[in-house]
Image 1 (tube, rainbow, N blue to C red):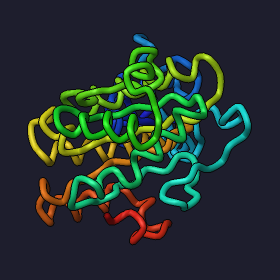
Image 2: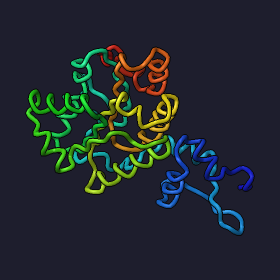
Image 3: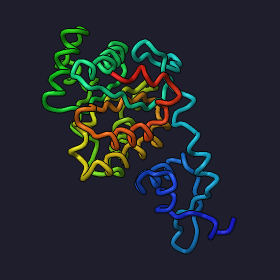
Length: 248
């Protein structure tokens, strides 16, 4: 194959909409085929291999301990590797789907991640404790529920951080990962809402490679209509499900 038909690391990262660090890590681990060219043995990637990589989930042969293929959200069966954006307009509506979703995972011994801070985090603490009977302090202390203020300062850093956290969570064996991101709490980590949505788009590509179900929660009181429309476009799984079931 001629070297001029191959992509370099930067071009491959742009193609997959991830960081260059992710490309190098996947290449080093053998997940992403690469070629070495020139005297400096620089990496090059075939576009066909990148297209194939997009549809080849990480750990496909070992999805979960019990071969779970879906989880329940609001009474609906949702496949693993689903990335959705519930929208709500009241505090109670923001907890309707996400709190039972986390509680189910915690009871099943699955690693859970919650991006929230301040009064929003307090609501989760109260609802998980009083409504679901979860010892919030215990599950956060032992690491089963990891509480994060935000994923990173930019899309590349955020994606790399998730890969690291999920890699650690999966080191003990196959399982289902559950993530709830309160985007009004995540937004201050980025320079702008455009940067936040660029992260959402990169996350959409990266998360398909892991046994994770993600709820990126949007408080309609905090975002304008244009941002909400772009958020829906960044979560195409919403259109394969009953969209109305995720509007609170």
